Length: 99
Length: 496
Image (spheres, one colour):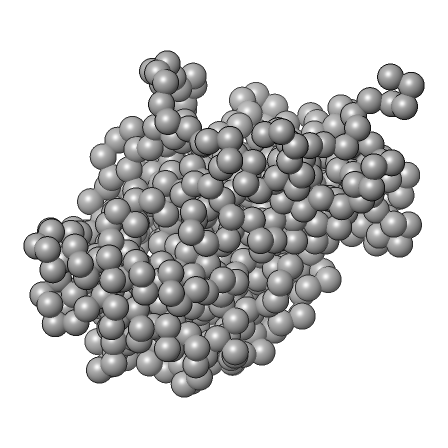
């Protein structure tokens, strides 16, 4: 039995905001299946009582002083934007037609 | 001897002493690049005039009597994943093609302050995802030892540039082995500092809990000088360690390992390893013993599970980090014809802008983080991470450093593993545990494999913030082997 189906890959692509073709979905379904089967080996380590590590360093809540400091100008911040209008990022519509 | 064959330490001293100018040194390297780049293709961006302008500025400051650091005027190549305000930064991705960052990464900025002259931006696997630099959206890079072989990855442009004498120094990033593995397969020195020892600010993020900037050089001392120049606490990176930089330069200058306890990792070596790699590795271990170290075997049974854990953790973090490439604020935008929604434009842009490996990892990470699978995959991988850290801690109770081969094989052929992700992932088998645990690890050349005449790397792993131990052992190995070989390993490389 495969670890992941083509429909599941299509769902992942939607969640990942990747507009994939049918051929790509077939291709990735095969590859992801092999990868997932292999990484499932993590289950072999007996780790029931072990706490998870999200990080290698024992750091929590690093704060800095709340002070005003120099930052990018609007020109700098917008310098790489695909589209700009009135000193703002211009984006495609984010609401439906009826809104 | 021509300027391009000098070490970074020598060049720095010559420039400071007025024997040669920074402009002359930069020109020598730019000329070398013009000569060999058509074959090696280590760089994504080169701009002779910007480089010479920086060199002229250093010469002017030195002439005015300013006292600069030991690497002032020395050229460097930066992996094209560190932002540079005067050069494009792409992460070798179409989604960032042509992007000019409005700011410098901390690593870039500190090295500018130290007076290093930027030669250009080097090639990499897209967003640092890969082990061969074949995943670059622009072109592959070739191994200077054999142009049909990969230079390793993801920092393969940086390793190739240094091995081909295009640059004496370069920067890289190591998330699962992306500095040590390319260093090993190109016969140079590569160091992954302790996680948090070098700043990630301005480093385009792949897996934030693992990404670590580090140096490449042709010898251990040069790597140490570069390591020291960019390391140290950075308030702009909240995971940066607020502690003194380990005394790596001093360690590189004092390669005395008598009485040091060195652990051989039992789990790394044997089946699946190339015989020529194992032969050089075993010789290196004997060499350490002959230099007065006490060598013992150490078992870290869960290290073999580091690879699967990594391929859950790194893609999970990548799926989240790469969500920022949304076609709205910078980079590529595709299909914005006035009829499509932002979400459609996003999906079209990401499909057009990301390459296959990046898409695979984003989807794999999205899968590992989905409800229903989270506990079995991402959650379990995080527990394995704890187990691996504990095994390192237990091992470092017994020994000062651990050693292993850096990679199971020498450089493989371009195209050989390109469409087999699992085979590609195996290149990082021995390097990944140190990323998961965050400890320091280095690769130093230890000879050529008999089968193919290609370089083999010895990996030296030290505890968190004991980076200096890697340099001490690395320098000892280098000194002993170079006296045996009658010079550096790179003198065996074919001329390009």
